Length: 138
Image: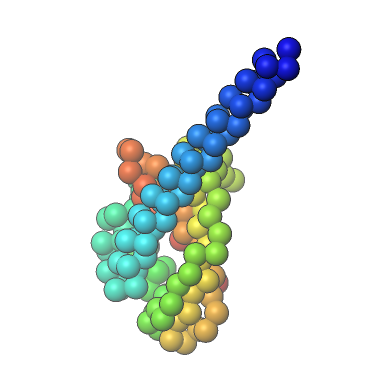
């Protein structure tokens, strides 16, 4: 009986480890995609950022509305000086969004005209690629 219990415990630990590894890989891939997307924003390539966004993002905001909103949000902040990932949360369900695979990333960011800001970027798995489905800076 003890041997069987040990085997189930070992199997459980292996499955949990595999799940954590898969989640870590997804977070890493989502962070990489977010970094590329944020580089477009930092370079004021706002139309390209819309083009590279998730289909869900494009369904919710038109390109013209995105250009207006992101310009109004980012231009007063000035150039990005530094950005550090402070949290990453994998989720399959988010409020107001269809079920899927998401990673909510929070960055501590310093801009030329705002020394301490928090950027929240939410990539989602969209046609087997991580693409940004949401962005918020405060």
